[in-house]
Length: 468
Image (tube, rainbow, N blue to C red; front, side, top):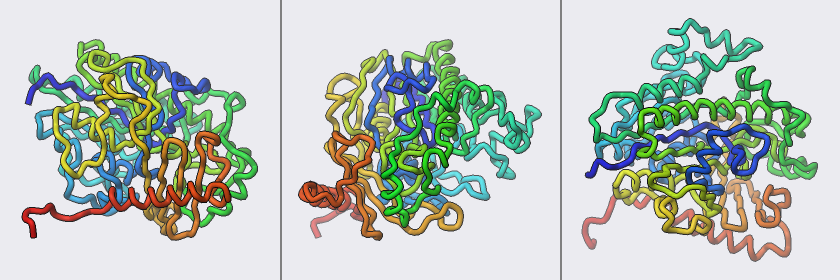
């Protein structure tokens, strides 16, 4: 294995929508670092997670398999399968020094520190959430205490947690620590930073909250007709109640959400500045993404659950390494986060095992493939993902099948479905499921979605070794 392979900085936020970057069309956010990353790299504007819920989404992109294929479809699960190996294990075995900071969440961290698996990380700094709920193994809370802070008291104060004690800042400090480690000159590294923000509760530091005026916010994508439509879907799992934007105080929530992203942008800049200072920027592939999105009041909903609206399943995905890749490319082709997994393997000079289901984006990054036409469809799954005791799950099963033009959502044990023409209706207000002039399209998409489900999610068991 050659050792001119790049370093990899893989920065993953939690619950960040796709439409939260200034350079990609949002004039209300403040994201100069991400804007520059877009200018210096390749941004995929139609990247979709494989589940709108944390654990199944993370399980998917850590293995390169759909959640149902990994058999890890829920939040709060007791354990994680021993096979297949996660991508960082394979990369570490090839000679990379791998580090993890923050939230991993392939299994439950409720009332316990998340158990380690055979993950390949030599550096592990854990913080599932910015609370002091873990008696041991919570590196972030220990960091706060070492600096004389009281995390619980700060979280309850009007000032909230100030930037100097914030989990996002802690993540940067850990990243700087890992990147600055002494290594042999030819050993590449991979760092996976997983901060908690902009996950709810939406409580940015006051200094950031004060930068965003609720009255200047555009508000959610909502029409009065959403009330009747979401009432029809009320039997499906969701973490919050159906409300109007005014009842949600949605513009204030949006302002706080954008404030959290502004802090992320500032802290992300500190890591990139370090790479510049130590001369590693040209040999480091920088990846920015998130595990899934946030409803943020769209269609009368807040948080996440069994829906597949754009704000919830479409996420940022940016690659930057100007010395190796194209610059200033914005691609509209359909992408799955599974493709990120395959791209990581390709960047490290590794062949993907047969279990991985994504497609490497390296040809696009190098200018060898069209960034606007990559896949004919993408999928996302919700299989009984929320715990009924803690987050209101009722045993809902749903799948999304999206083509370049249409999105089909089916709720399999509820006799419910949705169909949208995203070319004519990009924010999904006009459900065509029952429209007489769309029945042929609906039936075709149902067949395609079922075919994709059978082919892509069926576990065929052990490999063949003989003709019979």
